[in-house]
Length: 223
Ligand SMILES: Nc1ncnc2c1ncn2[C@@H]1O[C@H](COP(=O)(O)OP(=O)(O)OP(=O)(O)O)[C@@H](O)[C@H]1O
Ligand SMILES: [Mg+2]
Image (cartoon, rainbow, N blue to C red):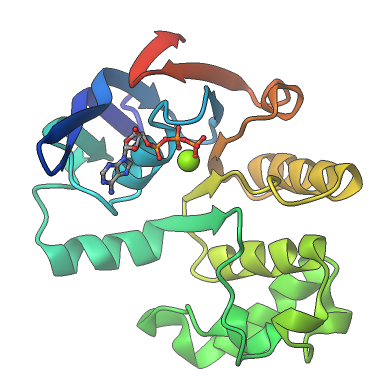
């Protein structure tokens, strides 16, 4: 069986003036459809860098990332942006919602052209699925952290992507809301068949994923 995502000998070096930072060193990793992988490791280990490169946001210095056997960095910028919009949903620690738009609009605005006609209907359905439909006319400033994160998840799901990439989605939440986010990840993985990568500092939450890897100083130290 071929993998959904194949990462081969991935290296990322940042140049900060005179200084070189090896954020990722020769990382090889594969993910199958419906995997649920947690990435843990200390601050500065390269977790976000890896997530961004997998999601097509940042180019590797060396090595390859393939999605369904296609090298995503051989695509042109436009093609990769389209691919990302269709196949990847991102969720971040600080939600990145648009303050001037209400909840429903925040979710619908990311709909790609093929879903634009039904964007508000899909947004409504997603808000119901996440049990936050009662807040659909609220603005982000009127929501709790947990509620904002639900909206961010709804936005990430609007184009029905194959993969959900989460960078510290629980980092800003209390324990109760953290648990709800992890329950949601499990539900998306089992009910909606999403492939999930979760970056977290929280080992307890990471252990609930199907697989876990550790990054340390840019190196993969277990698999
Ligand atoms: N855009 C950038 N320019 C220069 N250096 C960068 C850039 N992004 C990341 N780095 C460096 O790469 C290394 C890895 O950073 P990264 O953000 O991936 O770590 P992380 O594991 O996500 O850390 P944290 O847990 O604190 O979020 C760090 O040393 C960081 O300074
Ligand atoms: Mg990070």
